[in-house]
Amino acid sequence: MHTRSARRLPATAVTIAAVASTVSLAPAAVAQTSEPTPSTSAVPLSAAETGGVTILKKDPGGDVLPGASFTLVDSEGQQAASGETNADGQLAFEDLPPGVYRLKEVSSGSPLHDVVDDQDVIVTPGADTPLTIIDPFKPATVTVKARDSKSGTLLPGSTVNIGTGDTTLLTLTTGAGGTASAKLPVNSRTGTTFWVKQTKAPAGYELYKPSKSFTAKPGSPVTVTVTNTKTTSTTPAPSSSEKPSDRPTTDESTSDKPNPDQGDSTPSSSTSPSGTAVAAKTTTSTAAPAPKGTLAHTGADAAPWLLGGAGILLTVGGGAVFAARRRRADDDSDGPSLG
Image (tube, rainbow, N blue to C red; front, side, top):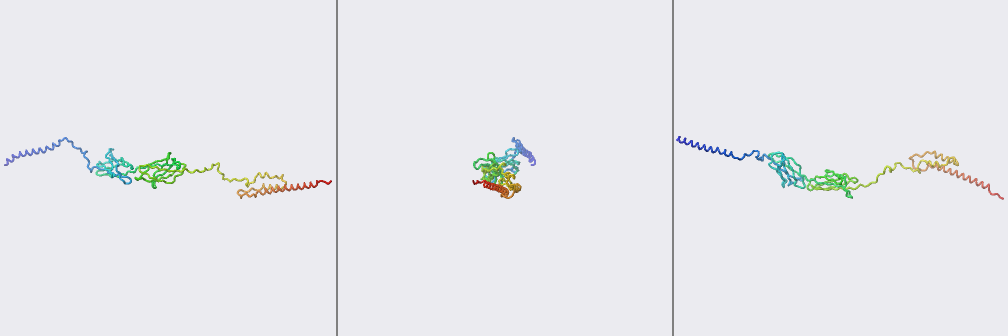
């Protein structure tokens, strides 16, 4: 029995060896296939190795803005992603390799809103970077005009302040054409109320003192007009040649000073019939003149002249009477004789 079993052993061994040979050759056939082995660099990153950016788009009033277009650019300047916000104002960029990106707003999607400036975004592995972007309202274009209140002519040189509440936002001066323009920030979809006040009037015109109010809407033009009235003409000041003298004029007829011509008309002592006239003249010539600043002229200083004149009249009258009496005596002595 032992010999039978032993004989059978070689046969059995051969069979096992053959099976073993077949099993060992199978992997060798698979290894010789012509397909290239994939590179490890082309293996896609897993969700734990990438990141993303989520955008929520609003306006200053809090309303969401659909249709806003964005582009994401990588550090090499290549476009990495792009898209538009949905009806809820949201946009998501996913599966982005970690790094620094540049976010550009191409369009706000609204005629009332402006785009924001470009900004950098950092993407980190396994996380989404949230961004809330608020688009400002487009500014209004305000034009200020200054006009003549009667003719309507545009006036240069008018300076105004424009503001809201207690804050002054703009200061404008009309140019040679009588107008001035600038951009005015607006913070409401329905418009913002402003005031305008003139601080300097055009040359030759009165200042327009009231403050006017107006409403400006996003992206729309608005015109504000200020009217001025010409200044009232005044009488020109007298020139230096016509300037009245501060010194009071003196009437020669009422002057307190004696008139030298009157002294010349007084008879001299050689022609005076008596010594009365000489005495009167001497008294007048030696009388002291009245000091300045005395009371109004009363004529008292003319008394010596009156007395002198009366003396002259009396002297002349006396001589006339004496001559008449002598002539009458001569006539009586020379009367006709009786014959």
